[in-house]
Image (cartoon, rainbow, N blue to C red; front, side):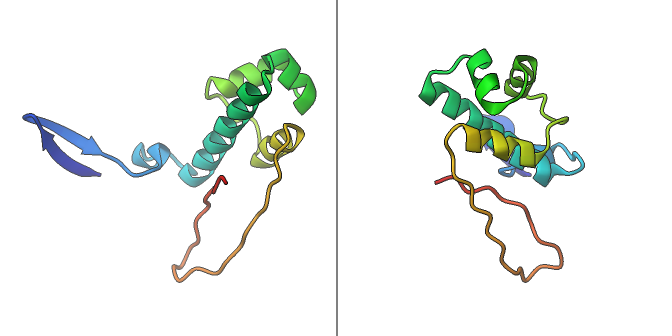
Length: 111
């Protein structure tokens, strides 16, 4: 994190991954899940779906939709979230490429 002084107040600016900034384990996976949930919410809004309608379309329960939209998605896999997006009209492509670093990173790019 970087420290800045703005109007006499010390401000910390983090990375693009708040989960990593908080030191949480599996921060890359949590960021991916959060980004997928954001896209699910965008799709629901674009389609004008209620939580109940979205749940039916995504083949999950309405309480799971509610939990997901409130940030409680730890019990839902990335694969299930991608399946939900497919059911809401998204195509998903997975791109793999070698990295120069010892360990690669997970990233989500939305078109």
